[in-house]
Length: 214
Image (cartoon, rainbow, N blue to C red; front, side, top):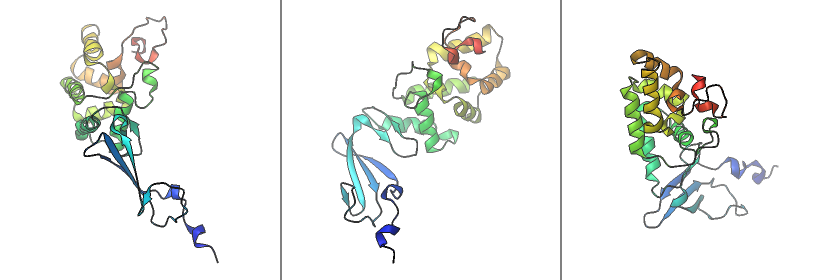
């Protein structure tokens, strides 16, 4: 007869989904993981009471556990990240896709686009909305913006005043690209919104953000 214990799945494989809660009074966050009730008393897990493991982490190091894409932020107010995700709700992204887009745009997830220059920062919903409204003013629909962010999530981390607006000016004034032609260009090559260098053929190792690719 097989031992009952041998038929149990590995505890690591049977962990339930993690949930995170902001502590109502202190500067702490309660992180709760539901464990299988079949764990025996010899389990190596600590802090397990009635099948639930809880632990506290500082709000100053907030981790988004709500999807398989885990993004660590250091905002004093963790609601900011959720507010930015809410701003993307109209574009029909999944929770995981929203975390990934914001993570790549703001340096929480590595992106080759930024090379080594991107400093991790927390997004501001006001800035995010300004960028989205500017892109809409260029004739991009919400469906178009879904495609742009899917193809180039880093667009939300580009500077509106120092990169996007000047680059659109270059496209319109120097290349005569406007209207429908501009829309088609941005759908095909949205990275042009973040170009910030022109090596003129003499490489400066900033290829992902160089006008030479245009």
